[in-house]
Amino acid sequence: MPRYFFDIMDAVQSVPDEAGLDCRDLGEAHRQARTLIADAMNGPEATRINWSAWRVEVRDEAHSLLFTVPFPPR
Amino acid sequence: MSVTGEEIPADRVVETLEILLRAPPFLRSPKLARFLRFVVEEELAGRGATIKAYTIATQALGRGPDFDPSIDPSVRVEAGRLRRALDEVYTQHAEGLQIRLVVPVGGYRPRFTVLEGAPPPPEEVPVPEPGIPLPPVVAHPRATVVAFTPRGQAAIIALLAAILLVLCIDLGLTLSARTTGAAPTPRDLAVRSR
Image (cartoon, rainbow over all chains, first blue to last red; front, side, top):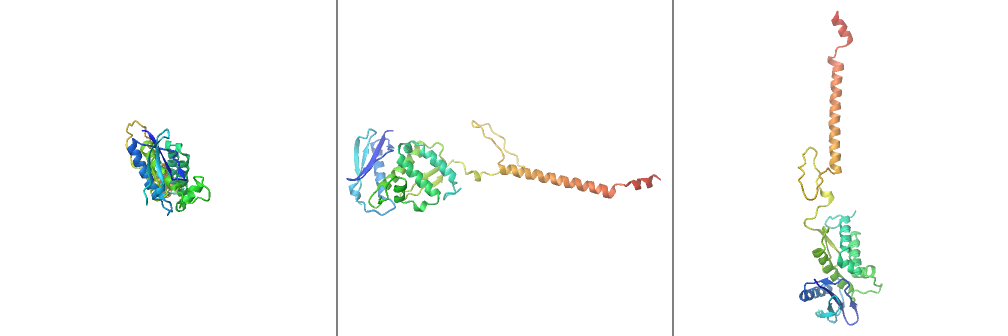
């Protein structure tokens, strides 16, 4: 299975993906990106984060950008 | 040794942790490996309630004391990746794993459950009763050794000692009865011979 990397960032901060995830295809990679977004938005602490400024950049094993998934506004 | 919430011995959780940390996702990401080790060790040390984004960031992820979880989602993001990495290990590299480790969404405290098919903890292994014949050993591709546990061995030794004691008492009583009661004395024998 190909491995995809899910870098999460806004205009000033970036949380790069070290491990990556094995996904069957681009469809599964898109689902994983949405799951990561849901996990990040459902943390235990209250935040003042403007989620609409954040996005997931999905990259292949050569770290070439494949597509971007924006966080939904809360 | 401390025990987890589901009565899983801590040493089994530590064993599981070490197996997980040798799996590909955690070898690829030292950051996720530190995250996982930190939350599991804190939980086992009884400090699960104090696992927060701030403690994870400053003690496991190398962030400074100015880390502010209310504006920095790093720990939330890494927690999501940790969950995906655990899923990947349990679906693709589950050899030797007998305990499922999860970090539920909405928190950072790990939870542990025994996987179906995993053997029970050693304390729960039934001890064979002395005197009950053991089932015959069936030929199997993997050799299985049937033996008494230390508790079983101690029970057998105690039983044999009790039997020996009863036999000794019985023998002593029999000899005592013969020498003090029915047995004729030399004087008796002399009288009878006249």
